Length: 435
Ligand code: F0G
Figure 1 (cartoon, rainbow, N blue to C red):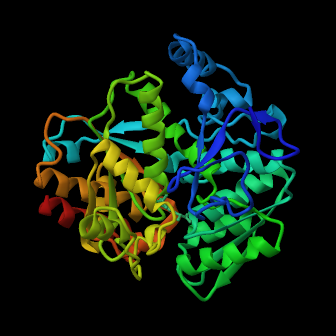
Figure 2 (cartoon, rainbow, N blue to C red; figure 1 turned 180 degrees about the horizontal axis):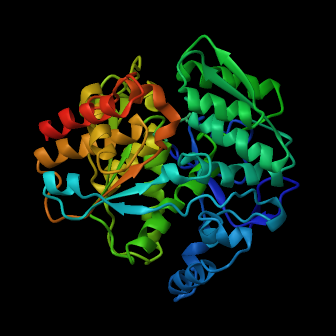
């Protein structure tokens, strides 16, 4: 319906400001409303006039694509392309992102008396985090528009994903990272995939601020989640989750919150499914922040989501060390529309939850474990009750941040000790006696 730019194909979507509601056909490189400078979101006016049965056919179409080896069908993002901005096949940049497992928890389910407790492990994406779904969507738009450079500011995972997808697309990438505050695994990925990595003496919020200024002066396509196409890719987790649950809507979905795009995208996905008639109700989407990086928690508590309260963020869950989240308005709307909670958890609670997940064979990075820590609080507050179905979204792979694990509680790393079997057996007997 509306061309996004002169050299991209005709696409049936518009960009709507999340604050003043102004609709625009195109966006500049900052992806801001031309009226009030707030964030934009993608909308699809044509859905309103969709013929009856459109939604039902979607389920069948998506299901049928599961068996296909075409890249755009094998992708857990592009398989749902009827609900995404149209991109020519040749411009789709994909590495089979999405398609992540939904795994029931056992020990945590028992201890919380929640028999229907599952994790959706987005850390099983190609670069080990949920970012890949969004980057696949947004970088495909960049390719369609003819960009050769892409860029982002990042706490680490976005940079890894941007670097990998840029390499796949034959583009150059530039990433701004807060010096000394990025987990080693993430930095290694960005370097491996050939990104130009600039470490700045500031935090994530400072990096994003500088990037705003940089993209005005340098022709790179912005891949931070200010870019509304990122959220279009990320919302597909809701579609995939519903397929995995046989279209039975869970009562709760819980995500960690940093820059707040993930919870926003998840909510957008569910709301679109409901508006299309594919599901009848919405899950309560709850967002968990680290207690010392809690701008959304404070905003909800202190002014009901009216005005963002910025904080100086500090947490060992470095992925969510963010005090001035860009997508806060979108996140507030998701909390309000779905009736979800916004909770904070301490550093100890995160470490404990991460160890508990690990003890049942589920690895994730610290930010992801905030979901389980938050769930415990929500159970205590009787916001979550048995036998409700609860899905925790684990956002990143355990190997992203191995330094964190070295200091984690309850580990059993013994030695160095003499390399003889008597020493080993003696040690094992002592352990055996303790159990
Ligand atoms: N979990 C992980 C593992 C993350 O990397 C992030 C964000 C979040 C949760 C929070 O998601 O920002 O959408 O609320 N990481 C960004 C990055 C900021 O640069 O990699 P959010």
